Length: 486
Image 1 (cartoon, rainbow, N blue to C red):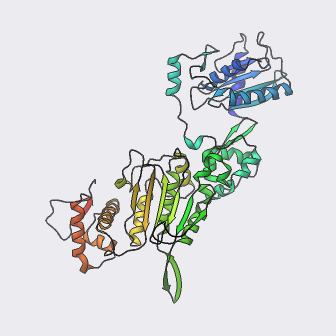
Image 2 (cartoon, rainbow, N blue to C red; image 1 turned 90 degrees about the vertical axis):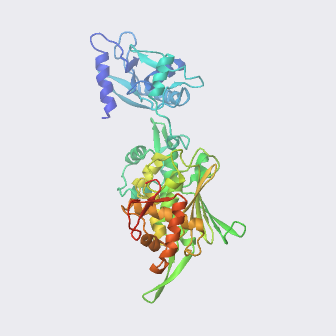
Image 3 (tube, rainbow, N blue to C red; image 1 turned 180 degrees about the vertical axis):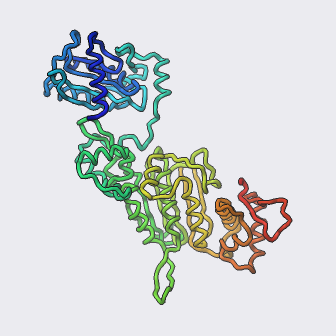
């Protein structure tokens, strides 16, 4: 038996004691009032009450005797209340119900959940039409009380909003690829339909609306949709993958559509991207094989970052992966959060625009732990000897650019300075300082080229990107450097 049912029955016994009286948390009725506005006021009051409250049908309003209610009448009440919870109050109110025998008669218990978003008020009216429970009765909330409700309200986030109209359970499990999510979590698939829908609720992928059905949330669709085009508000959020023949967008191009939810389609997306990227042929043990010129871990982290940190309030655009002959550009709608700086993204303090999606990607083992993604990507870029990661921000987008391999001589002066700065950060978080030797290793250069690296270090110092670790040291040979902010 659900905990709320036990609580409701305990309160009902207290209410029907030697001196019958309704309670703040519980109101009883013989049957449903024909006055819809009056009912909505009760729904508003209980949804604004900490812990929610209960309406019990089948009890005489005046004598407090248990008179009972028929199953047909109970079903009609449930249907009417469900409609009023959607259309009569705002935001939507969630209810649950229980029909059972009590003192020899059948009664209907309705549980009105406390709403996270407050105040709940009458639909199509201002928030001043909000109601509360006071002295075991329902009354209109004062402005001060409305302010208190707002202070204790949770601001709704995009991932928790509805992506669909009301769906049946069968429609939900048809639209969402829940089996792949189970696999990503290394969990056995539940055997019963109720267990699956309960689990999907716990995953915040769906919201149950009593016996009427379910809403699929934006997070549920974004993570597990079989086809994002089935959700009108998310159809433009699919990943666009475009391959160009040359170094710009003038030549021929080919677009590869991707309409799967981000989580269930991520692995296939990565493998497809790897398949269209230029490769490098190597010979090992007399056998030829192709290896990617881009590190896979960098692709995974940067693409995952674009998916989970995009700004969903920017309509009509979604993540984009553009493959050129000499680079790959990964972009998403939305600028960096105000607390972020472009040159401090490596091992930055964790913060996400879409925390539910970001948390899920970590639990699904799609991306690394909080704050370590860029560090992993930069480390892999250095290992592959690629030019530094380029980060570009516009008014409404954020882009990272991975370049194909180029030698030290082929890099621009600005690229060399940026590579030195990024290397100093990696060394700093490895509890080391950057030295001439570590920077030579980063650029795949030998000892005879130490003078070139010394000139680069001096240039990076002049640009204010690094600083000497121990300014008082007399040793020039083993001097080490830190990022400027360390």
